[in-house]
Amino acid sequence: MTTAVTLRGLRKSFGTLETIAGIDLDIEAGTFVSVIGPSGCGKSTLLRVVAGLEPASAGEALVYGEPATSARKHKQVAIVPQHPGLLPWRTVRANASLLLDINQKANRSTTTDPVELLERVGLTKFLDAHPHELSGGMQQRVALVRALALGAPLLAMDEPLAALDEITRSEMRLLINQLVQGRGVTTIFVTHSITEAVALSDRVLVTSPRPARIIADIHIGLTRPRPDDVEDEPRFFDLCNQVRHALHEGAHS
Amino acid sequence: MKGTRFIAPVVGLVIFFAAWEAFVRAFDIRPFVLEAPSRIVHYLLRFPNDYFRAALITMKHAVLGFAVAICIAIFLGAAMAASTFLEQATQPILTLIAVTPFAAYIGSVKIGLGAFSDKPVVFIVALVSLPAFAFAAVDGMRGADPSSRELLASVDASAWEVLWHLRLPSALPSLFTAAKYNTGLALIVAYLAEKGTGGLGEIGTRAFANNQGDRLWATIFAMAILGTISLVLLNLLQRAAMGWHASQRSQHS
Image 1 (cartoon, rainbow over the protein chains, first blue to last red):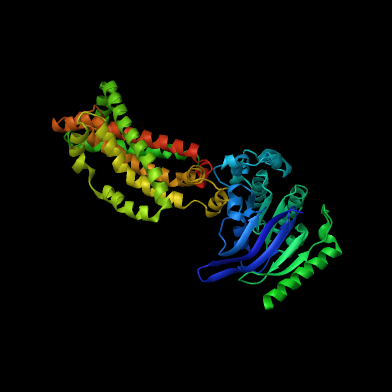
Image 2: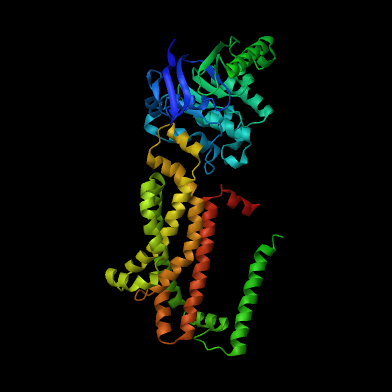
């Protein structure tokens, strides 16, 4: 298997504040990996370093064998931020193609038609609408399409469902599973939600309070493609408990 | 009460002009001090082509000066938003331009750039409009959504792409506010600076020198109409360019 992300001795500090304290990690291509940990522990910083948006203070971060900052320039990483960040003056269709319109010479051969993806996520009737006409869940679906349309081999999601209500979150979990699996895309998904992490992932990495270290690496052996009722399976509850215990142990260690 | 939105301003204006007319007639005010509205209209209608031609020249000066100022302000604003040093170096210059009375240096600029040419008029309009546009551009561009900035950085957007796709649209609301403030100012500057160019200002300053009250007040009236038309056009342009913005949406609801 190809390694999508390689972290070796990764450290990150802002002045005297250490946020990441030495992380070694390999993520196999095509897997879905969640990073879960207490608030402010450095999970988002870790994601930003992998996405090439923040340089590492020490160690290295490689994405498909090249330094993260260089991978960013080659559009190897597509990010889905916590807030959809849709441009209010662009229509849904134009927002979905934003990342393709920028730095066009670096566009990959694997790009997908954003309109086709918008149709898949049920936004056919809203192609010419502006963001203020959409609900929070719909806006986040556009943000997801915007990232997937890029055709990048690595998807970096930073708590994309955090601002949504419980029902919409549950719908979005199903949607992410349907959209991402089978595309061969590697995903790093930062979250606070144990349910989200287990429902979506092949691996769940539990981090310590700041500075972040990986204190548990839990393999989620649930079948792929994930059935829609995966969250009703007894094995699902066991895995949630396993992640919860790891988080508690980390918080009190 | 949708109807009152159009009726109320008309009623207000009718009362204002009626009171003005009554005041001039009742106190027998000299035409040079204050001319009655009925006589101003009568005078304007006697020479409609002359005033229309002169108004077009004044409008040309104001629009060209505006266009030059906006173009400079956008690039200056982008550079100032990107560099604190440049912002700090430029701010005192813009403040000096803003506080120095332009009427005092009109003569010098006209001698320098050609007394009978459009150039000095356009130059002074641009110079006087520049500070408000530049400060508006910097504020608007600095206020661009940080998560959108990061999103563009994630695909290695160039400075030009960030300016075009994010910073400039973000600055539109403040640029339109500055444009509304500058409209009156630009027309005043054009009026005072356009002696020798055939604009309304030339007719007005000559009428003033020759004690011709009706001619003077006809130009003042024409300037007021010009200012009103400019503001209406600006509002229509704003509605067309910023339909996505909350300020424009509330006008429709």
